[in-house]
Image (tube, rainbow, N blue to C red; front, top):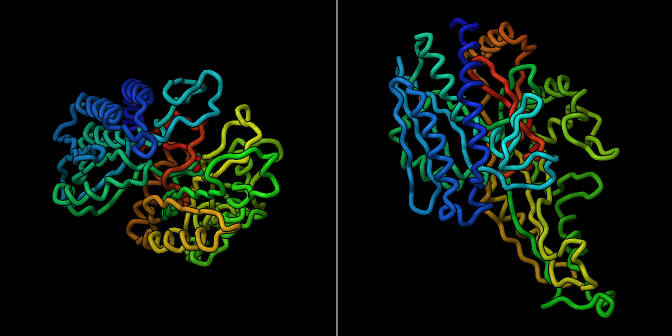
Length: 442
């Protein structure tokens, strides 16, 4: 491969064709089904599919076939296939559904308002995960431009990932014969520690999403008349959450939510921590004097990749402060987003979690837990020497062309659904056909 020609080709395609199309995609409010129950009637998901497919077809990639598969009641899936020069199959994965709008966008920015600022494209979905299909096509076109051999390539773009990919297994079953047996799977939906070197994902934490509700009254009553007699549903909710999380440290305490970290992953965490040690404080938009939960970079990497962690991502049953009266509310609901270690049995953990949170309710309150579909994590087998040599060779190529420092192996933090902050943006970043990467806070 002529690496300079490859870079020039990718850069030109990216600036002249991909970025304008990606910006138009950002403007489409195709939220994942979990956040838009009427997604099918609203038609935005269909708009996103048609938009991406139109761009792909306009590229006139020799030998490429494109299909959209639709199962009743399920989000559509795009399947692109191109035959190769050998019997191997490479499966490239991405998704096109988006997180909800969120709040806290800076002035002049918004979820469905594509804005170029400081060499970045801002807006919802460009980094997660709209870039995937563009990256795949860019890499294929660059190979064809230089008349280089490549394997059979299958690109699968789903539309329910941010809801936990409930539709993906059905399409994998339906398309099993068309996909074939993949020798390599490339998931274009992960994270990187920085933009200075190549990062490889070796695991993903699982996710348990649930809505925990504590109800103490049939209806709201005046807090002056009931306070001190009727328990606060919020206080009882806090007690229940403390059954699984130490509120002083954030440590998840039940044994069934903890797992031994494999030695090879711990060593990788040590190496990753050494690279990222000076960047954790700047990695996220901390407020005030808030900072990372530990001064140990290895511990932070492991906390983010192998330890369980809890986030309360939504609250129900309470008005906004400016609308709040002197009412003792009848109930409080918290949406719990619990990340679990990659090797934990998600189904079994969900059952155990339900028991812990609902049995023996404090104050005799009515407690319910609405558990969403458990999402298991993933842990790669130890990297084979052949694959490691191949990746090291790729790294060396990138180092020569982009001054990349060193190959790093990172346990990914990616899961479903995550907190992609409103400030997350797509960089104009190209790298040997990879097209772009992005920082994420999930």
